[in-house]
Length: 123
Image: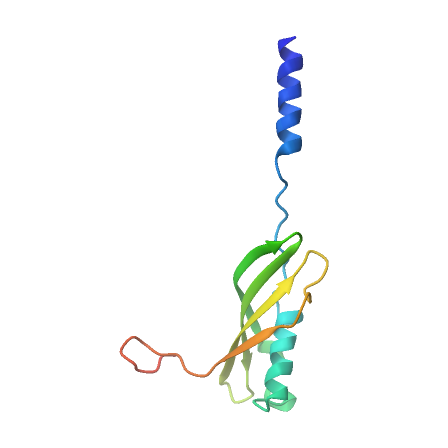
C-alpha cells in the first residue's frame, strides 16, 4: 500500500511539474537577428554590401526572456566588420519561438560611440 501511494505521489508530482523549454537559439551570423540588423543599417544607408567582410560577422546573445507560451524576447549584440577592419555594432531585439526566429520585427539600435565613465571614448 505504501509503495502504491509513493508511486502515485511521484507520478502526480512529475505530471504537475512544468516542463521548461529551452529558449530558441537564434544567434549566429546567418540567423534572423543578424540579417535584419544588416538590412536595417543598409536601408538607413549606414553600410553597403561591398563594405562588409561577412566572414567575420559575430553575434552574442545578451539576454533571452520568456514572454509568452513558446515566445521569447531575445537581445543580441551584432558586429559586422568593414573591409578596412573597423567594426560596426548594433543591438538587435527580437521575438522568437522554438519554430521561428522571426516572430516579429527586429528592433535595431546602432552603437555609435562607447564611452567610459570619464566621458572618454572606449574601444
